[in-house]
Length: 262
Image 1 (cartoon, rainbow, N blue to C red):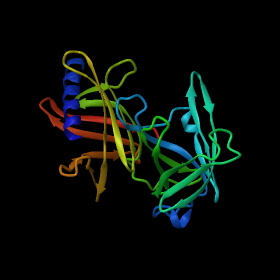
Image 2: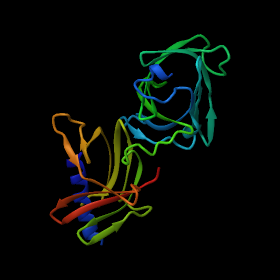
Image 3: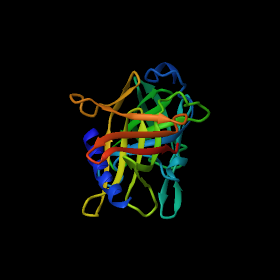
Image 4: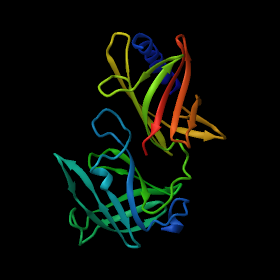
């Protein structure tokens, strides 16, 4: 993580210089019953590798409605310019962190009577689902329950957009249509850094990298490689709505700045 950011920020420096169910819920205390809305997804939507993403305008309408005996998956996805709604209803039991599910007789879609299973846990009031999706890929979904307060989550959790980068006293603002851009999608299980920056040859380098992280005391660490834990020099400000990361370079101290979107 640190090596990637360092390399990217050094390139940025050169650019700036040149441009100027409660008992069985995996240990949580939040009831499974209720409506759970899609917040983050970990999958490989386009064959370029798995990463954390935010749901698009259609997918963010998706939710799982859970009662004592039934799960209703109200699934929305993009089809052309429209949002396609394909709900599936399941009869289920929950045992040892696994939903054992059977497509119900009243399900609008799906092969009635077919079975499947989904691993689940509740962590910090979020519902985490792990399963094989219709593309037969491993997928993780992080869901949040309607009406639950999530303000106690770590401030790093969320969606961040880069606003500028500085090298010493020189500043470059992120502008639409320009190469310099970055964002972070972070949840309790990991985060993905999306970073575009101009190389010395003028080409725009686009990178997508995913990491695991942990907070110990007041410090953050990249633990993607457990044998090589690296500190992440994250600094929060303005009531945890702003984030910066700094590292030294031959051109001076390089800092990227991000603003929390959600």
